Length: 341
Image 1 (tube, one colour):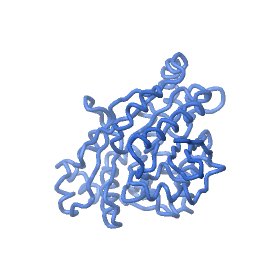
Image 2 (cartoon, one colour):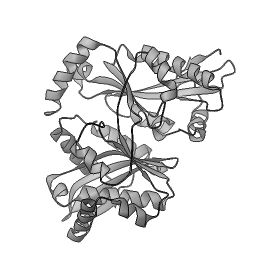
Image 3 (spheres, one colour):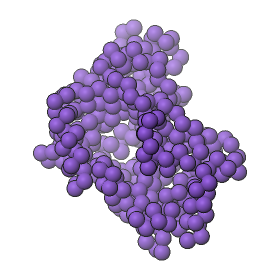
Image 4 (cartoon, one colour):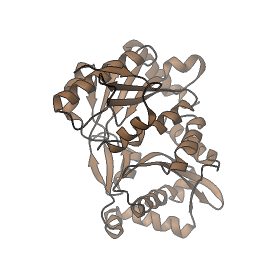
């Protein structure tokens, strides 16, 4: 198969959008809209690789983003390439042809990021074990990565029964205490939500994306119904919030955080239950509570998600370290810096 690559300036945006919407594994992270979000975000550099044939037919795509957790002289210590839900190849082709396309895209991707990123990661949203050989040949190593997936085709009464007993109790307590969930519009400020998320991740020693990322998601995705910003309030104060990405039958739990008051009033539990009910009412089929650690781990955020009763999946992630010495130095530096920045 004769293939050539195209960047975002050459590929027709409508063709790209159609490719993702019609692909059985098409997802919000691979859309032109997400490219626009990342383009508007400070310290983010989106990278789009497309494979086309001799007649310019789109055969495969991969949208990634190079993230820098810190700016200025610290930028090189935090630069990584992240891909969610990609790469994608035309599903109607044979397995061998799809594998060839995936291999081609991965090679182009590594060439593009190796000078600017310390490592590159691919977070899987479905089983891509059929491409493990191609990933291995391109230097990627597999690691376990759990997700918690809720089947929204079940009636609400059954979804409620699936909840852990403590979850039901906390949701009722939040309702009794008067915690309010508000959906933010594209013209509303989401600064309070971002501040709660930033503080939550800081306590965990994890750097979060800057405010421009959240502002860009709100401006680009919310008007199209591709993102929901939920603000949690107690006693007329913002105590937490969450961001959900919605596309093609799946809702994805992307970011969340709560203040100490938010944790004490169980605002986060009520927020997730609100999103479950909203997603089901709009006809979505799946709600993915996203990362839940590894099978051998017991982590607070993972247990929080598991108690909503969804199916535990382990599609894993693939990672290639591009600069091993710099990566080792950066890991130690990031652990310290993320607590203060």
